[in-house]
Image: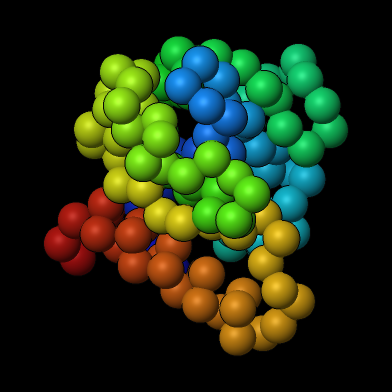
Length: 131
């Protein structure tokens, strides 16, 4: 229901790779992102180049995709948002787009999946404005 109320909201999932590079997620490669797409969430595809799961590119590419919501890799081995926060591209990317933590390797449990979906739904409802 939240996706229907926010049809124009573009969601970008990424994993920071340092001050110069970012890994942009391919929505079809990640179960939770596929589930969001099945629910009608408009996920941003990073384009053809790169690997099966990610496209590694400069931060400017992420900025150019103009997301309204950013899902940022929250795994312990991922670069944390405080690191790229010093870059102008990260500040531009997140100036108008809230950032939610996203675990690409979410534990296989109904509780974890439900919590993730609820968090995204709340963000979408906030971006959609008053009903």
